[in-house]
Image (cartoon, rainbow over all chains, first blue to last red; front, side, top):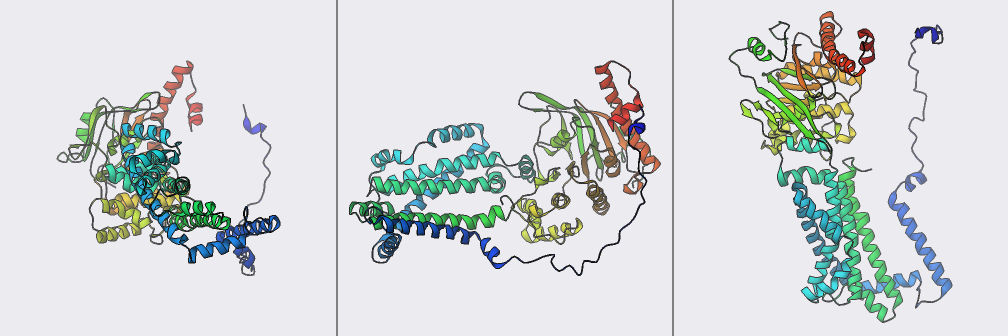
Length: 294
Length: 300
């Protein structure tokens, strides 16, 4: 079979080489963006404007509803927040909650690190971790509080116990799946350097799985925060002196609705600060800088 | 490049005697010896025999190429030498000692670009294996900078891997491996994922580095041309399972010879070796005669 006969005939064209064009008189190769566009590109500005809109809608609805007992105005809430912070003990209560949270969080992170390190080095460890996480992960921490009160009594012990429970499982789950997704080449490179055991985990697996670990830390933080507030609300004085949940609980009993809203707002603000400042800073200096996340 | 110019070829059967006749220096022991190495690995459903009774000797300053079609177990063999996989039969000795696990005396350059640690800069990546193995920070930095210079990355010591092109990443990996001054440098198709122009440039640079320091390297490739350019000695493997088909000399050629008659003759010879296998395979399946010339063009 002669393929050439079937192909369309070639059209003869002259060859040429092109001179490079002079680009000096093109002025707009790089045009700076307008100020408005640059402002819109700042994430903080965009996010903050959403909060302002929420506050405006809140204020307008409250002024229309005129029922401060059920739904106080935004400005009343701000006044209450200011009053409770400056004259009351809202800040101290916040600090008590955060202190407890940090202790529980730290213990949870430590146990998760040990568990996942064991899990990644031995098969029985993997089985233990997989079984425990699937079993305990869906169990709400708050459901363990009655038991914790029985074991550790009314005090920080029971709180820390349920906080550890709420941090440990999501973090362990994320970390372990992060370890498993570390590329085979990177693992071999690490072993090639002569790393083994916990050194291999600490120097190769943990940094390589950091995006997953970080999202585990975020989820763990959110779970812990939720658990703590809920526990303080349900079993008010579980921790000595009481925290933020106790503040909300007390003010609801006294029908100081603006103060209840102030307490809730404090919870939201702390959440935003931790997510938007602390975790974001970690993210910028790690996974984003390393090009692991965009 | 080297003094012996005897074009030689050892067939698997009489390989042993030939090698003894041909070894450069009867008094030097090979740096790396593999004796009857059979390697197997498990996939989800199969136990795959990747290489079957492969023997080879690598001497100091060899540029030893493992060449063969896909499925001939050349990468698996390199993993065996690297200590990532233990032979089920035979043994691999480095300087007389049996290889039992991975270690920095056999630094490996992998094909994949993700072999660099993404959380470290170019310089930190190159320093890292030295620091782990007890080199002081100051000395590690000095040595790293020398090798950054050698692989032409002097502008990028503080760049992170994700900012680099594929060729630059491979340069970092080569520098990271060479700076350790390993007994043997293992390279697993390091240029296979690069574009043709970059690959050619990298081959030249690698040969230049070899001229500087005369390191020993085992280089895996499936490109016959690359094997002849890079290699001083080529081990040709046949597939399913990988067995030694021949060991050839290629030290007389370097990159400037590509295209010369001798160069092409050797390339053709290797091609025919691999191609003969192919015809047999096909013949046994199809049960009819094949026009060899036509098959050759199909294969290319």
